[in-house]
Length: 339
Image (cartoon, rainbow, N blue to C red; front, side, top):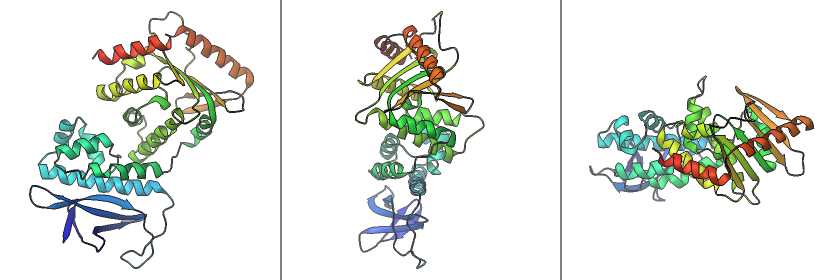
């Protein structure tokens, strides 16, 4: 018996699985699934690390970078989405319209340049009549993504290390939301609009790294986190309204955590202590507080005690000028429902 996946047929093995092609860091295992309306049987793809001998008689080395494995799996799932879409007779744009995604996003997913999100796999599975085949890949994709090495840009690594050790983090942001609070779709949109353009692999890597940092918000014990964002940020739908509404919901959820205090600086304020630009204050465990500033992709870590003291005093004034945390959450709720 043979099995068709992404337009290719694979022979049945004794273990009830279907061995697909070898990749540099593993092989794809295809598990049998149901038959489609035309009678063709389709399967679920799973990337498996394997040090057994390959079809050429040579032993495959253990991977040194799980990023390759995740990319292989993304490409395999993307091919399966394309096969199911074409079977339904839809263009990428038509599928995107039905699922609420852009044509460019569908194209990127089918080429394996984007990691398919669980909600996309569930929606596509249902719409394309995949009988659970796409939904079944969610766990494998999540595991492959979790194993992928987190790589921060060189200029950001010192900050990321200190942030991971911090017992207290204070943000003032004037153009956007702190990275620790961003949704994955929001982060992706921000990197996509960056100039000069970033390639898809770099975007994927940086988004993964940003989302990975957010685990510090829910670890135990968590750091105490405060943040002040501008009201204008709440009204600027970066990435589109659907992405923005999702981001506002994320802010409401995070703002209700016991270790997080989120405040909004009203646009109508006649005095504003943060006109010098955004900055972050970090207090690593057992170490002095430090400041961190970014401008036009240039970063600077402030360790001078007097400079940090001034930043801390400035931040105190900014918080006093902003809405209270409760008032801020109420404003976010009104903004979320205003469109």
